[in-house]
Image (tube, rainbow, N blue to C red; front, side, top):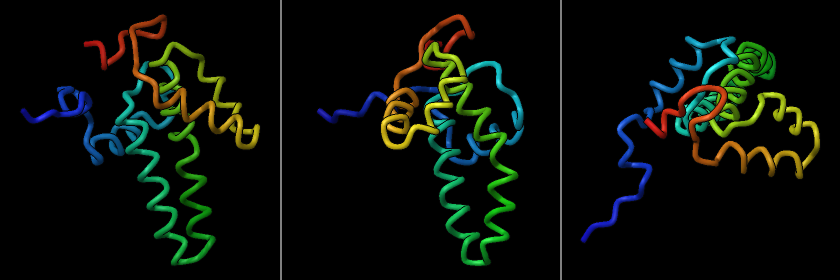
Length: 123
């Protein structure tokens, strides 16, 4: 019998392009929830695009970083809402290493229905 990981069985799993377009559509939307796939695909997009744009110069990469900072913070807040945490937990990123590890754990946790709305993982 072929074992398929649980994440591939979810009907509402976002693709790379869906996640990137959703994050730009919700450019500054800090309320609501974001699926794990939405957050991690957008994170990957930002890393890859930044690396590619660095080939054209640091100025281009800096402009991209300024353009994507707000949607990155917004999707981070929505992802934390999905795990029943406030978006203010993102301030942990200012604590080197320990804060980053804690945030990675929070962002990787499965969503649940909570005070911020119904999680898309539960639907």
